[in-house]
Amino acid sequence: MGVYKCCAEHIELAIDMYIDEKEAAPEIEKISVDKQALHCDFCKNQAIYVVGN
Ligand SMILES: [Zn+2]
Image (cartoon, rainbow, N blue to C red; front, side, top):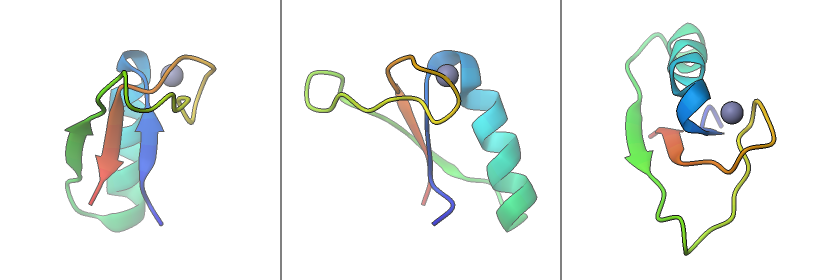
């Protein structure tokens, strides 16, 4: 695993968590909003980014 979905507010938190876990910089992908209604892993907002690779 080690892939986080997050909103704009939690992008830095997701990056920090990824780096803590993997000790490497993640790839950050922007989600196409109309295709997926994913929720942020850290709050109830809609996820905008996927952090991982
Ligand atoms: Zn969030």
